[in-house]
Image (cartoon, rainbow, N blue to C red; front, side):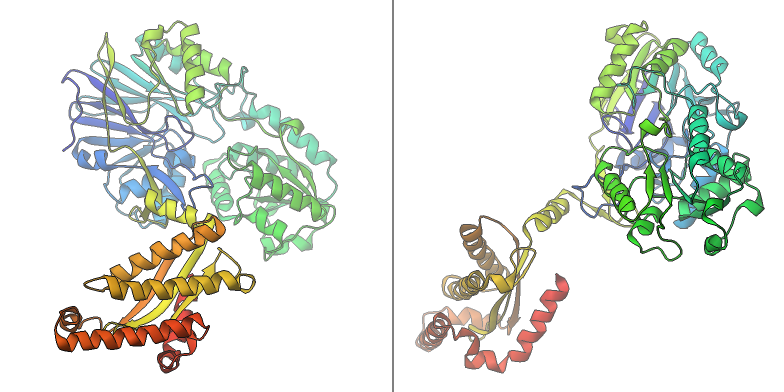
Length: 627
């Protein structure tokens, strides 16, 4: 079992994810034989992680110490805080504590993975306390772009460790929903906070983040100006924004149709928990849209980030079954592109404009505000909590660095501020804090599929990147190791490297190179097998293609071996006795004839090739299928 290098009286704080990045949040507080986990999120992959669906944490340390884990406490229901739960629960089953809206989303995720039946779920609110033998946990209400957000305070024998979760100070939430509980935060600060781990996302913005009510006013004004059909795109989890749009539509007498599974689930959960108030007669089925005039319809859909399979992208591309863009439509993007999505969002906006729609988007139209606090919010949190030690979390390095300077401006000594990396272990007592250890197993895990076991590593990612940049060349041949003959081929198939019909000279040269590579393998190796043939073909073909094109495609030899199990014959072939010398001479004469025919452009028409024409066709089909 992996153990931390800390003293028995020290409290450990460490992150499995969420430091130096936006996403994958997972923080742990450990004292002796008890571990409290806060959040378990995913990171959405950048473009260079080809084929990867999610990036999650390496859970090895937690799996090895599963008997110490007392529970996972969820601050809110965004994917970067709950998306990793199904993958963790596939490895270890631990209790989960979450507020009602987050719990509703968690149940849906676990049900999809058939994990709900065995999950231990506990619904909590801001006033609850959860006690264990040595640690206990309390909560405080915050505000964010999703309902039921909380911060978490872990009380230890050495002091209280506070994690804010994602927050801003929205003092005027929409729909008369509760605001941040400043009294709870101030009480924690008065009682004494040993370590504050605080959200750094908007540390670069020298401002107080605007309230959702400010967006609500502008959405109503925009809706009042629109005479045709409205298509409203937003994050499905931003129930506040969905409430603003639905309230504005209902005030105009519009009917509401919902597109996108995640949007449907979020609206159902919001309705059930009272965060949305959409009358049943205001919701219509997707197929009923054309029964109403355009000025009486609001379509709420997913796809505000340009996701290719989301509802809005399919509507724009004309591949959606129920709806397409019509002249007079107005598409409202009530979100800003997250890092990495700007190109896809701009492309989607351009496509919608080309289709005849008007598009409203961006901060310039006052239809979006962040769910994360700016510098003023962060300074306010620091003043309320008055921590002895400070660690900025949930943000890239530059954000953490700025947040650290804000902490120093509010009175936290410079030596008491720590910019950590994932895996770094802070060891705390009432009067001290030190960087004590690093969990080496903490690293990114790439999920390519649905389950925790569907992972790919850096070698696979490098190969995928190489395939995408350079293409693939397949060399196909059939050889007989009994007589050491090329029975069929060689033939070359290119995919993504060169266009074969326009590169006949290069393809012909590659064919010749593979032909001689096989003959040289017969001649120079004491024992010829698949590995020896593949190695020689890849080496010679790679050199030829690089010399001719300056590129290095992935080369896949597909060599079918006949009589490959006759190892005794292969071995005796190499012995210097009269019989085998005669065989060798016959083989060389035969190979020389084949080589001469190949050089004259007849190598593919010799007698053995005709006998194996059907084999060649089968291998060509196999190569295309593999590509």
